[in-house]
Image 1 (cartoon, rainbow, N blue to C red):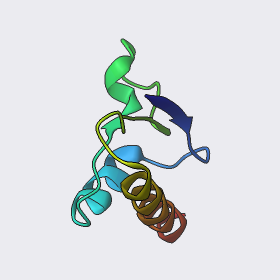
Image 2: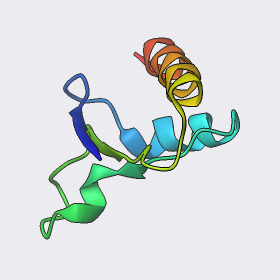
Image 3: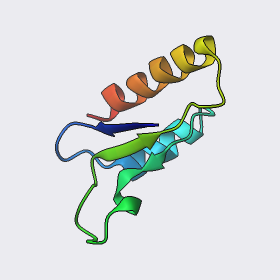
Image 4: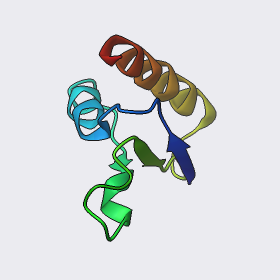
Length: 70
């Protein structure tokens, strides 16, 4: 598992929706906080069942989605 903090102000729920359309999934970090206004720009990545090339591809796609959303 990796805990990732994105750029301030970015909504990982939006990134999640856009990534899912490209078959990339993660858990938006706000679901791990008890306060509703916390963790908006965080995510938890889980690639424990993926091989190295799949991880590499997923990170590239995810980074493109984040860049296009800033």
